[in-house]
Length: 117
Image 1 (tube, one colour):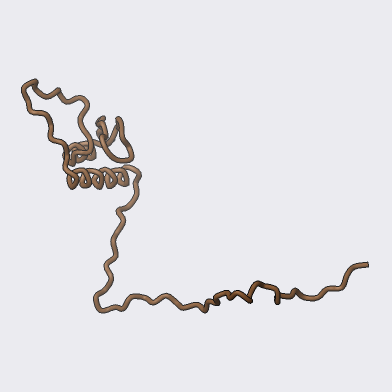
Image 2 (image 1 turned 180 degrees about the vertical axis):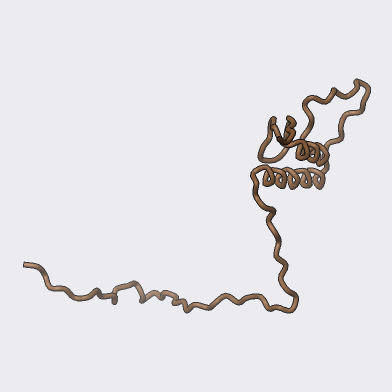
């Protein structure tokens, strides 16, 4: 049985308290998107934590999403790089017809049918 730890997720889709495997908890705290709720409080004379920069916040959100996919058991999405010598696929062209002012559907006729008696 794997060891679990409780963390408090600060960012990402699973904000709040989570019980996760210990390795995920350690990585989450290291990445900065979660904290250990049982850690001792900082000393009174300690400087306040710095607010994350935009880049740091984006990195934390990406790490939180990655961990969420791991917890759900999903595979990592792979980015496919196009081959340099291959041409991009051209979409098949379909014929389109633009409507004109005279084309209001008045010439459309259905098949003829005889009235029922």
